[in-house]
Length: 595
Image 1 (cartoon, rainbow, N blue to C red):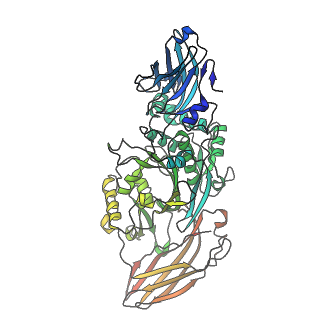
Image 2 (cartoon, rainbow, N blue to C red):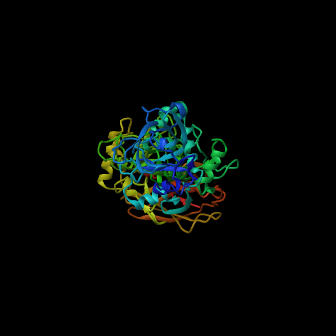
């Protein structure tokens, strides 16, 4: 193995030295910025004295170009000679063989290379090899200093994906399988069929020196929304013509199915499946990464850093474009960002999200967005920082739609979005909370300062009503609804509602309770129950507890079909009577039950 006529590629030795032997020891797979050895054997005296010229080509054959760094031509240098870029030095020499160390530049394009040699007037191919990113090389943009973290974020083929809700986090084992025999070739095929490569292969292959570019391309290619991507997303619960997202537990089966179907998408995925498959592809190509879950994750569709909810009389609330998901899963990839700053200010973890939510530069992809930029509210930076900032730190603003067509801001929640941001800990299966990497403590002056900075930097924002009225007024009536017993699928829900007035006069409230079955994405699929009643509150006292007799079975609510549904009970509209006037009040309250 490893021989091509009179050339020994030393596949096993080279691959072990380059941390790629888990992929294969039968083919040459190396990392950029680190030398690998080749031995020319059975040379005659005349051949040993001739110059050997290497020709290395990456990409679409004859289109390879030295100016685009997809082609290199170089001679073997003496052992003590200095070399830059692609170079080869004599490492050992005998009367019938010569061993050379071939070095690639730290910014070489990744991918499969053809290797040819020229001796005298004759030239021939001696084989192929694959070049990957090198997080062990300090000059590589993917360099990760700690060996423990490299073992976890590059070499670990198994991990944990977190789902559920903020007060009920559920770990799910996942097999990434980035070193399975055919996964690397599938990842390279993903790059070759991406729309940018199909439009201009020369430029695309040349750009593969850059982990920023490669991660963005893979973010688009893991979903099939607008290309020959891997996974089709579906959230409506009907998966009869494919595989339900919750049935997947490893990336390899998905990638192989896509490859075997000649790049036709696999059905179906949701956010955690998209993220896990992206994690596999990034680790396989040498970009350190980890899967991250954000609980109470906002989806801001119009880029104003708020989630806007609207309600009408009696609590009727249509599905809004903006929403808050029980959880959302993305990937953090580790790389430098010299495109954003000459310093290391934005280096490190970058959010890369393959779930097709909103278009970025015309394509369903997201990132890489520097986590450090998200923390500081630097929303003017690329890529997609405003969108990710909103996911972890948007304000939820509730509007009352008036009969004359106008709307009134009723309430703002500055704390719900972005909770318990989680990833697997290094070297263990414990959960690590990384919320502090994304946002300052909720309720702190610094957090509000960063929010205003995010608004200021994001030039396309139009904050409805201005920043000054985002903070909610202190309500004079408190509302509390709690779960009396444990929620069990197929059983009635037992809830208790209590109200308390801090007013000095008696109040009469009209209460409208609505229950809806809601997907984990925040999208309402059905109204399942409602109840209206009136209650009088005495000054500075509480009225009730009162049981909410829902007569509501969770199976009838549609909750039996998927573990990713939640039940939201919302008090959407109340009216406070004071003398002859009727003043509108509104509370938004949700009891999320993951059945």
